[in-house]
Structure formats: C-alpha cells, structure tokens
Amino acid sequence: MAMIVALGAFLMTLAGGWTAQRITDRRHLVLGLAGGLMLGVVGLDLLPEAMEAAGGPVFGVPAALLLFVGGFLVAHVVERLLAVRQAAHGADPGERVPQVGLTAAAAMVGHSLMDGIALGAAFQVGGGMGVAVAIAVITHDFADGFNTYTLTRLYGNDRRKAVLMLVADALAPVVGAASTVLFTFPEELLGSYLGFFGGALLYLAAAEILPEAHHDHPALSTLLCTVAGVAGIWLVVAIAG
Image (tube, rainbow, N blue to C red; front, side, top):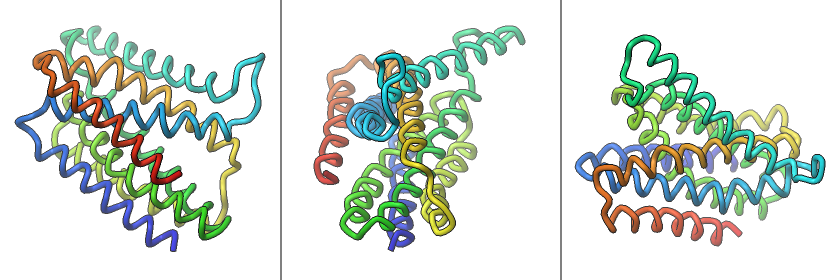
C-alpha cells in the first residue's frame, strides 16, 4: 500500500513542476505562490512535526528550534560563500548563483526522500496512521515539485537541469517508501532533519523568492498568490490532521 501511495506522490510532484514551468509569462505570480507554499510548509507542517519528534531541550531551547535556526544560518552562509567565490572570478556580485539553486533543489529531494520513509513507517504502524500520512504526502508533494522546479530555475540553471531535479524529487518518495522494507529511521533523527531543513527553506523563501517576486512586479496579485500558498498548505494540514 505504501508503494501505491508513493507512486501517487511521484505523479503529484511531476504535476507541480509541470505547472511551474508552464506559467512562464506570470513569473512573479509563480514566485509569489512558491514563497507562500514554502512559508506554509515550514510554519504549519515541518516545524510542528520537528517540535514533536526532535527530542528534548538543549540548554533550555527545544532541539528542533536550534536546528531550525542552524538550517537558516547554514543556508545564508552557503549562499554568501558561493556569491563571494563567484565575485572573485569576475562575475557580477548581484548575479544569481546556479549552485545555490541546485543545492536548494537537492534539499527538496532529500525532504521528499524523508516523506517516503515517513510514509512507509506510518503504514508499518497501522492503516489509519498510513492514510493520514498518505494524504499529507500526496497533497503537499505538488508544492514540492512546484518549488523544486522554481528554485532551480530562479538561480539561473537551464531547463534541463530543472527537469532533472524535478524527476529526482518525484522519484525520492518512491525510493524512501521502498527503503522502509529494510529499515526505519529513529523518530528523533527525522525530527532533527525536519527542523534543520525548515530553517533552510525559510531562508530561501524570505530572503530570495519573495523579494524576487516583488522586485519587478510589486502587485497585489503577487501578494495574494503568497497568501493563497500559505492557505493551501493550511488546508492540507487540516485535511491530514
């Protein structure tokens, strides 16, 4: 059953990426929606799950929040180091760094892999748990595919690389679900990963995608797309809960 659901996640991820690449003449709306989806995933899905699973506090601060801040800082440091390296080779400091887009997309692939592992583990626990996780994974994998393609293209990578990252993201939950036949990850490790990944994702949404969305088109429609993205993830979380 877990593999059937993982195949559904595969198709939804591809559908999200296809949607992102088809709306080429409304790039600001795509970015606004992507930013909202990412903000919603982080604040309403990843962080609450991480808080429950990542273990107890470290010097008075929940481990999930420490990792969340760490993920944000690591994303910022990586982007700055790549930008400095590019500037040292004579490139425009304001130019997008393709490696950042690929790194961000790779993180999305890693997240989808963990989705598949969580899906397989949930069905091992019981049918009811499996169905709840299946709804969450399938519905939000559309957003994952959308964001994976958008992130890769945003930083100047060509369409071929964006499609390759999209396909990798679509295959990841299938591989993750299949891996649970052999083993499962400890809940605390999964929670720690979700906290760290959430911080990195928030950085990309707040520092890169949303400013880019409003740079040339500071329109109300862009803002509404962002709000719609957050509301969409909220609906997904409500249905899954």
